Every structure is written in C-alpha cells, then in structure tokens.
Amino acid sequence: MSLSESREHASGSARHWVIVREDDLALGPLRWNVFTRAGQLVAPRGYVIESETTRQRLAEAELVRIADPREDVDASRRVDVDAFDASEMRRLTDPLRELASPVESALLSVKLPGDAQPRKLPVEYAGKVGLSSLMFVAPQLPTGMTWRNYEGYEVSLRLMSGRDIYVFASSIMAFTDRPVGVLHVRYPAEAACKSVRESARINTLLPATLHVGGNDPMKGLIRDLSTSGAAVETAFVLTTGTEVGVEFELFVSGAARRIRVPTVIRNVGRGGRGRMRYGMRFGDIAPNDRERLELALKAYLYEQVIERKAALD
Image (tube, rainbow, N blue to C red; front, side, top):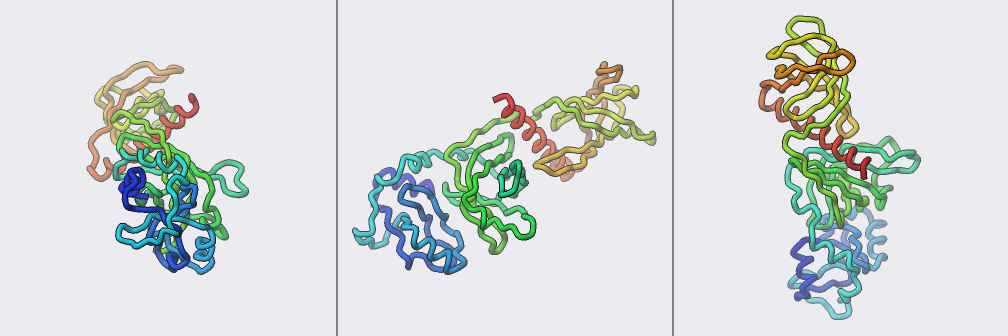
C-alpha cells in the first residue's frame, strides 16, 4: 500500500476497501495491492499472475483491495475497515523512510529445506512498491530449486546505504521471473538502523602482504582498519613516509574480495610479540578505483559493526 493510500484509509476518506472479484484477476500484472481481510498483504501492485492456477488460487482466497477513486462500488462489495488489525495502521510510520539510494550492499539470510544454518546471500536492491514490498534481484539457486517454492519463508535482511545500516526481519512475499527473477520481500513493520561515522574504525586480525619498492613481499597483520587507513604490524623495520602497497582479502556478503591499496606510513610504534606497528594512510588512487575500494571497505566495516553489536545484545 502506498503512503497516500494508507493516509486515506486512516482518515476515512471516500476510498473504500472492496472484495476482489474473479474478474479483477486477469493474467498479467496486478492493478492493485491485494490483502487478506486481516490486513496482510498477499501480492503487490505489479505482481505478475502467470498462470490460471495462480489466478484461481488468488480468486479463492477472499482477498480485498482499495477501490479506485472514481470506481463505482456496489455497497455489497465494501469491507468494514475495522476488520483490519492494528498492524496495517503501523504502516503509516515508514521504518525505512530514511533509506536513500543507492543501497550499496544487501544481504539476505534465509533457511531453506535441508539447510543446517541459514544461508547468507548477497542480493541487489531493485527498489520498492510503496510500503508494500522491497524488490531484490533473485540470487541463483542450485538446479532444481526455485524461489517460487519458498514464498512465505521467513528472511532477515541487512541493507547498507551511505553511513546507515538497516536490519530487519521479513518474509518472501512473491517471486516473479519476467523479465528477470525478482524477489518481493514484505515491507517491514519495524527495522533497526545504526549510523556509522564517516571513517569507522574497527579492530581486525587480517593477514596482509606488504609491497615496498622492488623488495620481496613481506608478511603483515592488519590490526585495525578504516576507510581512510589501517594499522599494520610486521616483523620488518620501516620508516615514516615510506610508501607501502598493502594487499589483503575481505569477505563481504559472503564473497571474497582481494584488495590492494597504496599507503604511506604516518607513524611508527611497538606492536605485539616484538613486531613493529605502523599507522598507514591510504594514498592516491584513481577516482573510480577509490569509489570501488570505499564501497568494499564500508560494506566490510559495517557488517563487522552489526555482527559485533548483535553478539553483545
């Protein structure tokens, strides 16, 4: 349901909830959001009815929708809005109202039949349908599995946009495969949002390879990391101002990303176990490369922040 529709419903305007008739359900995209009589969204506007079986199933479900403004509605088709529970009213407050484009990273967690643990799947955010659903490009499943079989399954989602991370529980509302596979995930009634400062810094233990001039690569350990630099420990002695190429691997949304970035040593100190600790600031790189690097680093840093927060809660 769109926000304007919700407001009209709440204010008791001329629009009415009406019973969905079989002739409302033609093959092809739906013209309306359709709901159960308890206010549960079943399918969003634009959901494609691809088969007669699906059409009949919807027709038999005794669904309701909001009448069009100029639609002449017979009184017998109207539904008492009091029949809708309070959860629909809570949709007036959009828990994702601050979500901005682009969504830089999205991770969907779902436990499918046979899974011992929920699988974490990187997904691409494709937009939303009012306050009804969020759309994601459907990730590939193994041969013989289709997302259509998992409509109704519970999921959790983590979205990163700018300096904000959104985490919420939901369910798979519908799957469409034309023109591309898209998952419609039920719009959340509530979501947790955490803002992270522009150059968030976290403690890590990431193995790294250090490249200095034409010398042989050296082993190092990244002890903390931000989008602007890192603290690296190594057994090798280096000096302030030395240019060092730092190479390391991050796991972001379940996928490995190999990172190599130029740095400059800004300060020198003592590390653990007799090693030296170097504060390194990331150096100059091409704008496009810097944007990709910052997106990868932000995604990793924000995932770590959320996971550590969840472990403490």
